[in-house]
Length: 280
Ligand code: SAM
Image 1: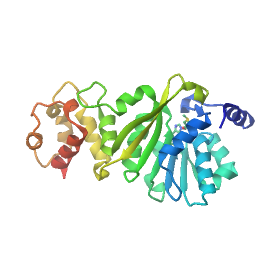
Image 2: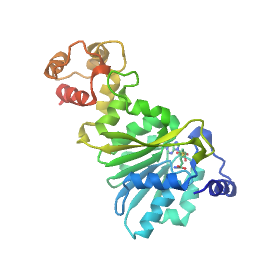
Image 3: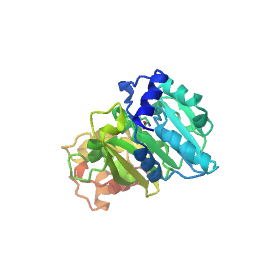
Image 4: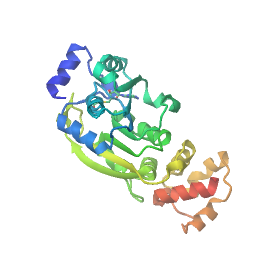
């Protein structure tokens, strides 16, 4: 989809981009093709897209489905009614994709009645953390996520222990899979152009992610609630609400971690072990 095509679609359908929903539409065919190629989406897989906009990625996926005469199931969740109905009225898209008009953050997990293999999203940047968290919790069976995020935000997604950026988001992403920055996308590749540079990242699932649950996420968030304190002090309030089956000091000892360790020094794998020891 070229810049001219994007502008023409917007004008002829009176869809003025709404900044409150982070509407910056991709207008570069080579970036679109690269994203689809690395996404892993293939004939007969089930694909979930968050925020299809005017269909830059969706149209390519539908085309792949059509050209391969395959049974790829594509679910696209769009918050903006104008965009959702534009896509639903588009024969090429509606024939191959189910467009759901909803705030993804409020989408009931069971609304999608099959197991999702691949996830794609040019993420609305204002809700990046919440969307990634929900994707990981609701679709732990997925094989890969391919996401466009703000380039500056990548440091938080991929932060390593004992760094300033390390926190619940990096722990969670690492628990889900291998995080990789694939390529940087200049703001000129969007219409309208966002204020920041973007990048495309992949999260490839690597472990049995059954551990990932809202409870586990709360535990990790509580651990980071008082960054300057020890893990024990940060988790005291959490333990008052949810009594563990063994003491944290015993669990830390079993992991050969210092009893005065801070959350920022605990690795993503150690968080999983700790949670399992304390609650399973
Ligand atoms: N995928 C399109 C593209 O690459 O051109 C549009 C990307 S645009 C950055 C983000 C899209 O997400 C917009 O269409 C916006 O309306 C939609 N969106 C924003 N918040 C959303 C939410 N909470 N749930 C679902 N869609 C959302």
